[in-house]
Image (cartoon, rainbow, N blue to C red; front, top):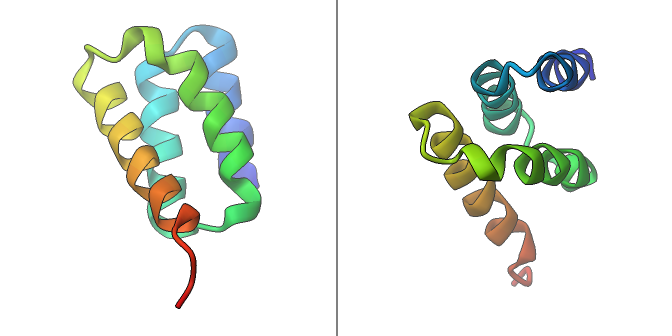
Length: 74
């Protein structure tokens, strides 16, 4: 939960790249569906800056994680 707060703080300061890096680390470590809403909020804010490599990396990883959780379990 602390990292989510740190990512949000980076966004509030306008440090989009740092927010993307922290959020991407969170996704790699947790991948819990209960946090997807928070990741989606971060993705929405970062989307206009997707040309920056760190931000694009986060958005791509978020999309993959979201698709994994959207797939029906077998």
